[in-house]
Amino acid sequence: MTMTMTMLCHSFKLTQLTRQRTATLPLTRLSSSLSEIREIHEKALSLAPPATSSASSEWSLNIAHLLTHHLNLPPNTYSSIFNKNYPPNLNLSSPPTFFSDVTRLTNSEPIQYILGSWDFYTLSNVLCSAPVLIPRPETEDLITILLTSIPPSPAAKKLNIIDVGTGTGCIGISILKELPNVNLYGVEPGVEAYNLTNLNINKFEKEFKHNSDYVKLYGCGIEDLEEIECDYIISNPPYIPTRDMEGLDDKVIRYEDYKALWGGEDGLDVIREVLRYAEKVGGKVFGEGDEGCVEGVRRFVGERGEVEGRKDFMGKERFFIVSWL
Ligand SMILES: C[S@@+](CC[C@H](N)C(=O)[O-])C[C@H]1O[C@@H](n2cnc3c(N)ncnc32)[C@H](O)[C@@H]1O
Image (cartoon, rainbow, N blue to C red; front, side):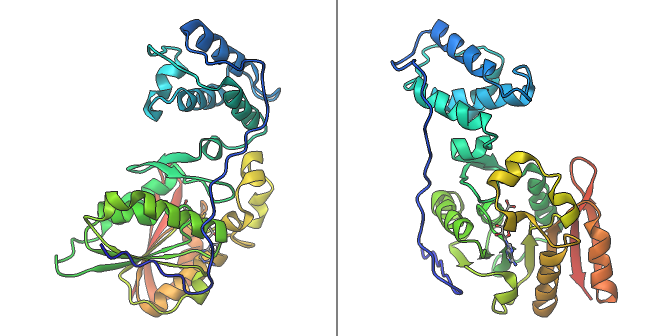
């Protein structure tokens, strides 16, 4: 397989995903009896920060995710842990490490960064590390919109698709896995995100290589990207308008990259950059933005193209498809 991964604008080193583990509890030996696990679980639930009730389902779910992870159970068994239906033969190898991760949760650190991975679309355990944006479930809708909107392409024709702002690489890698005959171009100016995209491409290569062996990653912003003849551009760019930045959740503000979130005064700065590029190279755009962004996209595109808005699973119109006339 000839995987082409090229950096054009600047060069970065691959970073190691590191996980900090700090706090300790007196429980130091291997805990394997059901009553010990039950006790540890109850103790962890009781450590919910004051503003969060230990009965809050988010806290309980996160503790279930953590415990599942530390018991080395498959991630999809967390609901049985959540409901305290413990499977047999449990083995918690390091309670102090588990409780140090609980401490990270109490500090509002997102569970995805603590676990180091999260599921997205049909990808299991996409590597996640701060400050790279954690893949969101709404973005899965954007992929479905693209996959269900584009006509089948003749077997001999390769589709050129650009993913703008790759982050973890979750969008581009999902497309490579789902769609045959794709040349994927990724664009990402953030060093940590660029490196994480690379790690995830390597991790998932075996899941998409039957479809494609062509991935090219650019370490720059879309405004500096060379002209690539492309069929489609997909992007979940930074799109939060200034007025909404202050209202963001504590865990988002403290852990996720500001540059992955803020989209300028009206939230459309990078969206406009993507549209300018797409108009120049003629690619159809599938994009995600803030609620209300579709009107802004329509104003920007004017008579030069057609804009279709789509709703997310919460009923908010946040996706746009732009075809040039
Ligand atoms: C909202 S995150 C999306 C990450 C990923 N695609 C996802 O859906 O989880 C936006 C990403 O765009 C990148 N970005 C910011 N400005 C950009 C620009 N001018 N051109 C391309 N990417 C940009 C950020 O570094 C960030 O990784």
